[in-house]
Length: 214
Image 1 (cartoon, rainbow, N blue to C red):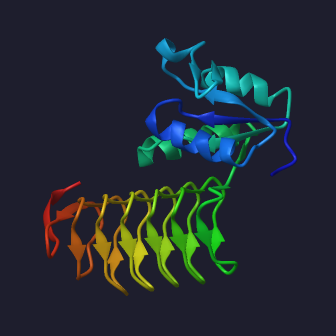
Image 2: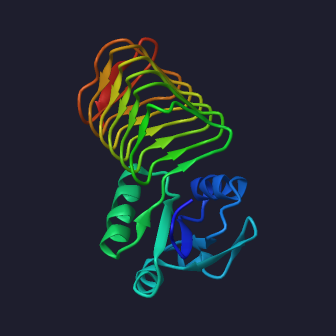
């Protein structure tokens, strides 16, 4: 997959398991285990893989070997912070696509982005750095996902729609074509978004309406 000596999943809880499962499905030979900052998880075995250490341990490891990190943190802001630390330590950000996903050859995937099983990404879509396209999510043509954004399972973004940096589209939500969602906003599960959503708000319902600040 890449010319590294070791590959770790940063985050050993729920989302991290799904990210690790992509690597197991790909039979990634460099996969060495998990990194997690929760002291209670140190030394545990998850999906047959060890939790090797915390961020400080990874920093030391990155100083000794060429290391890559797959981002296994679901929270957008926490994932951004972890990515920035990893890059500062000299680790590479792995970009992952599940073998069961469909990604157009003309789509662009940013460093550290993850595409889960059964997701579809259509022509000329642009997926930002550290973004998540979760299980069975649909990203249509010319969609743009901002850095560290997240499209949750079974959500759909129509052609030429936009999702801002650090924003979340909840499970099963639908963003119709040419609609823009601002930065740091949340679209609730099952919502249908038919008009633009500004920065920093929570919107849900059918049709979606702004309910409060994020």
